[in-house]
Length: 367
Image (cartoon, rainbow, N blue to C red; front, top):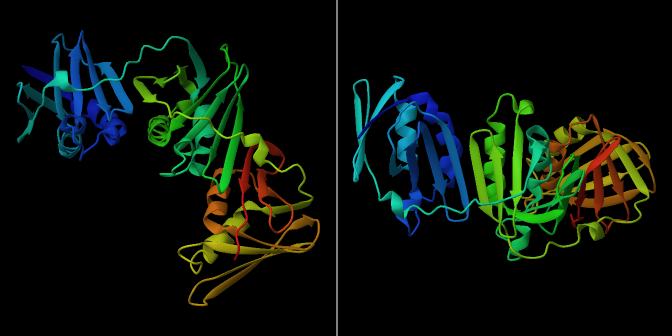
């Protein structure tokens, strides 16, 4: 079977789906992409048994065929070719890729062995894709990583009638963001695994005019499905009960600090050069109009910075993880940030100045 394709029609989609493929898995088929031509459309699908991404486009061929091809090799070959016209000569055991004077032969596996996650999810919600991307970007950096409490290794999403709330925590910090959306749906909650969230960000970020695209979301008791233009992302959900995030937010934080975000970010970046590799600690010493920052490492090397600020409260010394602060400042876009503090042994609440739709809790550390 011979299929003619345009190189660029597959290069970009493959970038967004090959990361799902598992290269060193006990099931070799998971290192392959399922390539299907059916009723004039081409479908690309990658899966790792937990997360599945597929892409479809009009291929202009009436041939019906299913084949698998090594994901990374296929993507790298197509990207390296210098001409747009590509011919695929498909047999049950291999695929010959021809373009100009280039010719490659790669192995194929039985497409019937390719595992596909059932995407028969009924009720769907339409969400503004730009708002969804902002919501995920504002919170996902605080997800747990290989935490024994598996429910922390994902993003908690709460759908209500008119809002979507996303929450992520690793036990040392918490990020919460709320977006207003008109959802004609019953209330739902789910924990979406880290890998699915990373793929969702990758796909949404690939669109140039994301503001013109809607994402359809369907949630069942076990799976979540995102339909985004030509992409379909489906994932199994993380089982377990997410902790009550409302209890994390302190009821009283009497000390209020307002500081220029970029000045604070630059100072922290300089201090990170000398901060301890293991603990990344920075000490805040705050008085009426001055924020003093300091760090010291195990070699007794130190760094100090001073920033003008607006502060209402008692003089205070408190330590934080420098990396956590920088990651939080990266997702806030306003000129000033508000940092609400209690005692030296309580966490801080960080918000954008004048906007509390996104809130960030960072627990203190000894520096």
